Image (cartoon, rainbow, N blue to C red; front, top):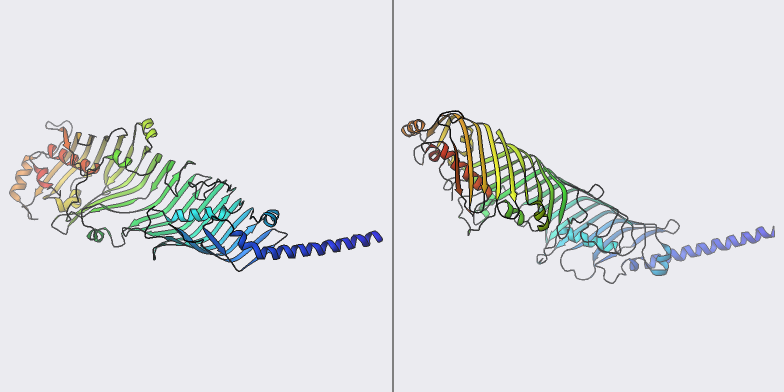
Length: 534
């Protein structure tokens, strides 16, 4: 009995001491937690809060209503914010009490609201993504945090005093973090086991007035994939009205696409600060791109434009794509006709194909020697188009082989009417083939244009009135058909002088037009396709 009484007394004493210890521990944490969190001398952000719950035995702290503000004056981009709840799980109590260090298994932010500030004077050209990356790096480097989770976050992006963008339902899960060294090419700038990021929507107003929108974003290091859905970049007022805001002729571009997916992203890729993209594959699905040029404007000071090799080399960051795949896409070029309110446009649709070995990295260019690929499609939802392309890396040259067949020639009236001095009444294109070897100065071409039942009608000069006499003469002069096996069948070899102030697609169009003019005799093709150059 005496032993039991002694044990009972000892137990009571231990319980009292434990209660005193827990009380003291809770009181100490209440008095010191905020100062411990904000104790790092070189921190960029302060955390402030009024209350929290501390479970000593579970080693859990739940902080409510947390405010985040810059520590001192900030240069460049920075973040302010409010977090509904911050959850610190599995605290190392020994380090907390003895070393005043926060060492935890897991950190969770619930329902944070961020404001990302971008100064008007931004000489380093820092982006909103870099502000968030720096913010996460700052908070996670304050202790031995193994896992981090951000749930249902939202963000506003402010340029000066103007809101220019938003993020909604922004989520992050980062596991097995090693926060002892910074890795700025990672979205969470530390070594990790896995990072998963999802965003439900994002919008951003560009400096030129275009609106950039993304429906969903998903990034997973485990699958090495970045996926963006429902993407668009458009002038809110439309391309034609936007052209009234520019001084000189330029190509204004709007686009939208269903999805863009990077697969097989290499570990040394950097999507968040100094851009460096290296991936096995980029898939672009459902691209609709519109390119408009207002020819009523004067041309800017002439600048020599590169061909395909030069266009790749102008990409300002390291890029390596084993395969670029395009599916179910369309590209439309349109321009105004000088001196009129008319617009003509040409659409390449049902585009499918791929390019391989695209890179801006010199040692890989030396290894690959060239990039190239093959595409199929239609023109204005008609005909059958297939095209192969090979582009050298060591000089600005390319080889292209384009085939187009089964096309009703009068459909050209719908496409080119504003720049035609007449119309095609009947005709069927059986096959067109253009082989181009182009350099910076010219293209060397082989051209085939097989057609049947061609009949045209020409207009009087500068009017839409029919010129019957000239039409009769033109139809007598032309061959109504040009098919293999016919006595007067023609293919042509010729050179086309390149306009160095226009791009490779202009050279393709000019070479095609010159080939048609050589095969269709009597000057009829030249007469009907009046020049639209300005």
